[in-house]
Length: 552
Image (cartoon, rainbow, N blue to C red; front, side, top):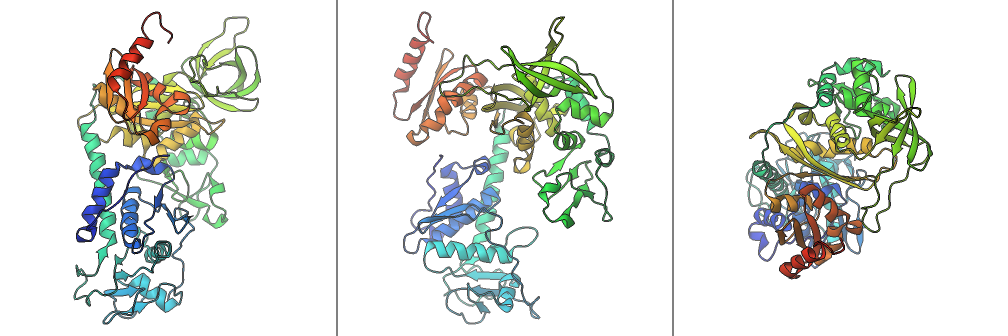
């Protein structure tokens, strides 16, 4: 578990927005950290609810969503979409414009007031339609956070949250809409955190290593060609109908328990199918076919181009496991209605770290693999592999246009099948999108799509994208993520990396896996040590252990 210190410090009331951003900077939290569950450990001291709400707004701005809070001895699962809804009925828009109102605290003079716990439609109207809202939290961190999220949900608009001002209830009567003396503008905290996150992203993109362009492989060019096919025609061929609204019936109908919501897919101007109600945000033709039919990249391309390309060496295929033998797994591969017999070789297990279990498939499992050769006669079966780096490249190419155009390239892949894969990426242009961010995609949608295809049978593999760097030190720090590396020493192809004691086990990874994969990417032999270790002595010891004649 990753833990960070997130505090505003003494005197934070003088500059709450600036202090909130400083707290984020000290924590080194990034958008990627929020792919995991995040819990804010609230300040339960008397009066601590105000600091907690400011930090909560900062985390919301950084994450783009609500996070959980531990307060009052239990976790408030505020990240659940159904935790607080804004569906309470109101009395309609007020006849007179409400520039300011107050929720909670003592009734003020000069502006409308409603209690925090009120559900009366007239009270909901005030919270929802007031242009600016002063929010006076109740005593105690847990009830304060609960009340805050409820108010924010009521004030939510289609474009997002409208956070209130954190008020003491004793501010002067506001004189104008943007009166600066009405408490702490929590939405200003949200916006500052968003700007900080964007600056971090741009800074990382500007500092990223730019590499020389490479020739795009013919297989990736075919993906780009297929993605230019009209996506509406692909939806028709997949058998999905178009409703009276002009939208299409969602291929993932299971995501819509209410059948009236089934026609939710629209075709965008950039030739994608988009359904905002589904985990799939927007998909180009190849990704659309691959997701709905559970096909490998080249199989999906053949469907879109309608060319029934034969299965051949270098093609990615969906293998269906039928049995087990000494060398590997017997499989069948569908080639346009014709079944090919195939042998899926077992991944090499000799170099797995202790405690990492080798992957094992069973009859009926579907595996995305690559054809590497055919066994000699009289066997004649296709040889399949799941360890080829090009397999990962091809899968990512289905979801990442920049890989197919050559604007982003994959520099190295390190994988332990069924457990963890790390991919180093770089851009080929001085100006362009952040390579890592582009591969991950908005809301990690591209990454999740690639992972579903990469690990169809188990759904347990981790896929991590890291920035390539020519500088060995920077590259190793990047490769160690999500663990934050501290001091490190590199010499003669070996490296020792110090991490905080509470992150030590995570830095090593299961059985040393994180360190091993980081070493594979960087070409170094990596050892993780806790902070405080004498790095020079540790590096000397590591090199001596691995010198000729010594056990590896």
